Length: 324
Image (cartoon, rainbow, N blue to C red; front, top):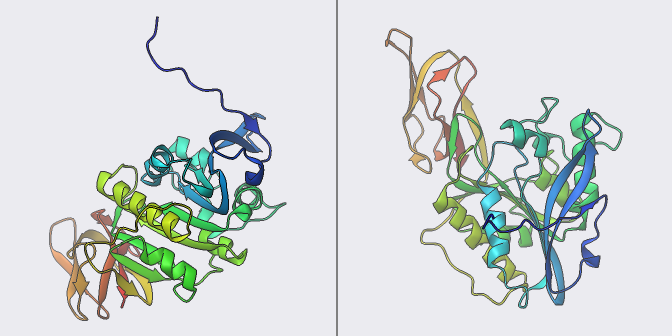
């Protein structure tokens, strides 16, 4: 006889209204979002904690890119830690948005599109457009607030940083409560999930929580602290707001610096390091080990993320520079 715990039966639904979920419960659902080429449902995992008292709906999403994993345990753990008897309002977790790509351990969707470039999609569009349109209109539009968790892509590493519209007072406060190393100002209407939410009047931030294809305990813990802080700020919980150990660096914009030749690339500064205009940030060597190019910072800034893949073709990424 097996001593393993039994798996609860999770209902499969075609639609869900978070305001109709029973109060004082934590529920799990599979949402039948689309159907694959075999006619099999592609189901989205959803966790809903609805408090006994009324309040706003805060959505947490992760794995919009199928290889960005740190957000998954953040969402799992926040629902283990939440006290449903103290919660006011509703907390909704979508631990995996891009279900087909998670199986494949790939960043992009089945048709090669980046889901975070095509939000909110199209009702009668192509494969990826329909997928995100249904996700936004069946799930996201019910939120009052959104925290979307990401990581760096393959071959890169990131600082712990936030993207947010810092001109919006509520969004700005949500961003500052994350105690991140860096915040980058990003206006909405940019094709991202965050931007699509803001177009619907939902205050939203993007959390870039580390590196792809791995779980990083320290960053998972930081992500949890930020969520608890937002729950307190929104008066959904009575827990105290936890301040960070260091001051967050705020950037008015950011951009990637690219190579103009190929070879073996070494990026010199660490993530979150300040660099000065003219400072050497990377060196390129050919396959024989000869130095072929040095790259310098075009202006003062901070390293948000960088490439760690040595083999770099012409037009490859060097580092993501934030401008203070």
